[in-house]
Image (cartoon, rainbow, N blue to C red):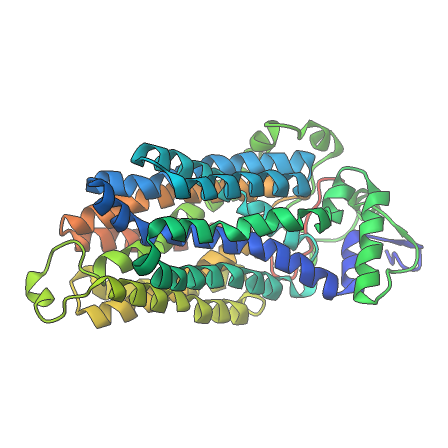
Length: 484
């Protein structure tokens, strides 16, 4: 059915008509700031652990807990914020996420003891779990035709956050200490609070809630700022479109990947029942595959980050004969962290080239394979310079797969459970992040580098197998809504 000639148009048609312009650029900047804040807070874990350990005479287990507690907080936060934003709006999610992250992050600067620091970093992690809300919100403003490319561009904020944090630690740590690094790293979360008032609600969320007139006002503002026009006629929800297309032929490339949920299902999706909807017969296969994919992806990605600080600086005390030829000091740790952080830029460039050309599944499989190749030589100890560049290549491709997986997961779910589904998948990934410090720090400190790297390689292989089991790719497909 031609909706323009019928005087009706859908949200996806409206977004295609207004295009990607200045309005979406602001949305990109605000959502990207949320991801930049998360990247900075995560990258802190590579730098402050050793300093805090020395100052308070901590054990290796206590040092690892500083990382693990953040991921534990993110695990709970991803689930909580996903449900909050799916049921009460993306904007309300932003407000509480920013308040928790900034408040706990800034207060951790003044931690008087190890216990208080662990507690506050756990709260920071709880706030950081809301990154899925920023991603889904931005996704819902982007036209389907070039969604993959813009989502990769969105992911550059994570990379720049990682690079900026490495540079910040390089400059601040030797001069002012770890507390000032924590203070400066909370600034992006404070900026999110300041800008919250001008962040619009997602029109797709508003349509899903039946607030079509509110969604239209947002779309009119988008068209005005972009200096374009909406299609002629009346905005209709996905319900109208689906009813007219009940007798349509088999799905084409523009058909939503998953069937829309029924109206009865929509009414039942409230509160914590959103989680159980992910395990319904229509979604359970996708949900379980995403959980394994995100666990393996996070486990390998954060493992590579933590290996950077452990292997390239020889902090573990192993391989004494090699240390005699090159004894890396603290400045070298910041140098290597900075170098490997910049690896994410070519990783993003590679994923941008692949994601809308070969699709999400092939992109992830290819880059996972390259990450495997770069990690494989680290099964045995390598010279420090070669180790740094192998980690550079591994992180480049791990970031690429992480980016595409982050695009893929919210595309697979209908609007009513989109941030919940993406958030829970992200939360399962945080479990991989929680295990990582115990592996990368514990095993390498105990001179079991081969065992640590082997676990990361196994995680990559399992992830690739899961990717092959997804029945569809979402390249070029419209986002699915919850009505029929």
